[in-house]
Length: 287
Image (cartoon, rainbow, N blue to C red; front, side):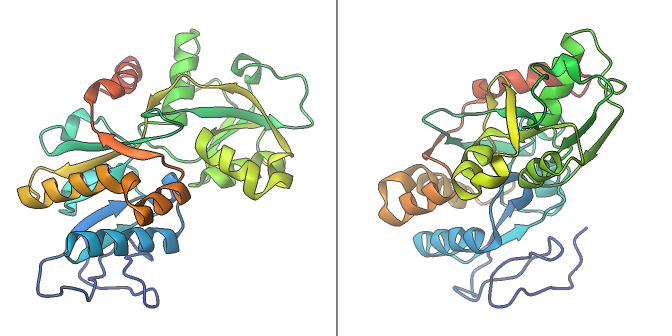
């Protein structure tokens, strides 16, 4: 249950200190559309998220409330429990909630509806060329999300006949892909796994930090973070939000926001895109 106590972040329409709702003042006579976004996982900042909220609000002519949380362990579950109408998640597909959530749209990265992660080590480590050489290492992940690098690394180890729970000496989580890079660069971990899109962005933003680590391998592609609708959401709202997302790349302001979010466009959701996630989760006993 979400507390009714409200935390405000200046003038922003964000529930950003505790994942709690803050109602926008625009169209306050309407029940707000509530959208969940785990910013740490998607690598977005609060100001950009709020610009996205304002864009949706203006184009939909409907008040929009963004529920932002840096600690979502399962965003799909949070969407259902907190009665959010929509959520941009990294844990789709989740069979436990398939009756409660519908796939609305998938973002395109470099023209494809897929994401991947990089295995990184310190730039001073010139000997490591594969995951298999990291037995007994300290390894860092961004989060325990059901999809993404945490799932992929464990699946790779299992496929190689290793026990994912015992292969590393220790693992820890930073809740941020950028902080994974920092942890490896500073020697807090021997290696880590980081979202490839965020890595590519950091090559431009902070070349000095990226130069302190190097990429060893790229994971197999898996479905990009999905935009879901709660099956209890208003049917007209679902149609309107999907139509808006799919048209963002044709609207100048929408295209600008997409570029800053490192997304080319949104396309209609297709469950087949997420088959590799299903395969990995099933192998690890999580499906």
